[in-house]
Image (cartoon, rainbow, N blue to C red):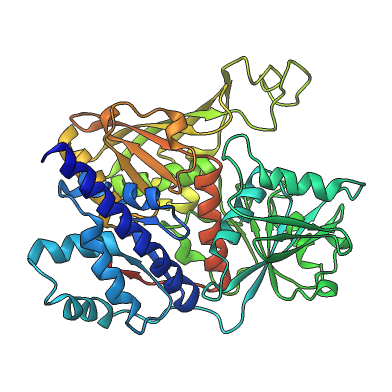
Amino acid sequence: MSPEQHLTQWQQSQADAETMSPLISKLYREKGVEIQIYGRAVINASTIDLLKSHRVARWYTGQEVTTAHTLPILEALAQMPLSPCRIDIGRLANVYWRDHEDLAQLDDFLKTAIADLPPSTSLKEPRDIVLYGFGRIGRLVTRLMVEKSGPGYPLRLRAIVVRGGKDGDLEKRASLLRRDSVHGPFNGSILVDHARNALIVNGNYIQIIYANHPSEVDYEAHGIKNAVVVDNTGMWRDVDGLSNHLTAKGAGKVLLTAPGKGDIKNIVFGVNHGDIKDSDTIVSAASCTTNAITPVLKAMNDRYGVESGHIETVHSFTNDQNLIDNFHKGDRRGRAASLNMVLTSTGAAKAVAKALPALKGKLTGNAIRVPTPNVSMAIANLNLGKEVDRDSLNAYLRETALMSPLAGQIDYTQSTEIVSSDIVGSRYAGVVDSEATIADGNRCVLYIWYDNEFGYSCQVIHCIEQMAGVQYPVIPAVNQH
């Protein structure tokens, strides 16, 4: 291909992507259909982001999938009667163009693909969501919910509960949502309504409620009913403490964004989300590390059997550490977070058993806090029930990341140059670094990157949807291992 042809091809791909954007938006806003490209949601994606998403195909299949392959599929879908679902046009394109040379049979192919589509479990009326706390996770969950908002999405972020209320508080809250040192600027518009103590975020009216305790809150006074309250504070982690939320008028259920204690169900979406029952009023979304490692551990146990193992977490510092040396009730955490590697304990390895009981008592774990503000890594040293070699193990994990029920949780990279900052903004619970994989006999070592803020927040959103009774079928259907 000549230099001129490269440029011509790129310009045509740009034109295709520009044509795709309004179709993607229309399908989402009017029909509740979320378009994905190899597991990557492309709602509100830029032209360049769309083009980059198409390049993912090479990692998994070794074949090129271009906008010329996906645009006809998207155009045909836009003309079809569809109920709310998630459609991966990258995977559809791979299957179709593998077996066909032209568009003659595309309509029949797509009709067959959606013919067995189970009805989506959606809601007749929008379900109210409340965030209790507005820290790192709270603000990212806000970004994600606002991004999803529209006629086709049945969950509505109605209120945020915070302490404070002094002059300038609303502006401070708005500024923290608008600007983020790690995740960049908010994509949209944020207006402050002083008269009603509210933020209007991309048209979403979000009431700011000031309270020091759930007992002080009356959600019904703001027109909020049967809300799922997402506790981002971590102040309460047991049933007694979290039940305080249920005493507030207008609260229906509680989701904790931290590991729950006692009999609280710790949910890692993709692994045990089916354990959430309509009768459950208090549920935990576990921890970021538990979410990162459990899907990969499930995949490994399903294929090879995990006999025992140790999980070492290299974790970015968090707000519970000190910026400079000072008193801290926890061991070592009083030392300056930005200057030290800090050895500490983690319950993530043992917590895996709450989501994956087959591994109960088989894992140990420790953590090292390091001087980075975001993105962590889990190193899983596993003893397996079967022998395995590096190539076959990586091939299995690659297939798991592409076409398994865990495809929404596990990502996979073959890059030899990837570093932690490249993972910022990853929407996956964990990213397998295949170049670092070690396998010898019945032992292996896996390196799993994860955005401990954004990736975890995406898992929280999935849990909110499950608790609210929202489930979307996926086209094409993923394979069961």
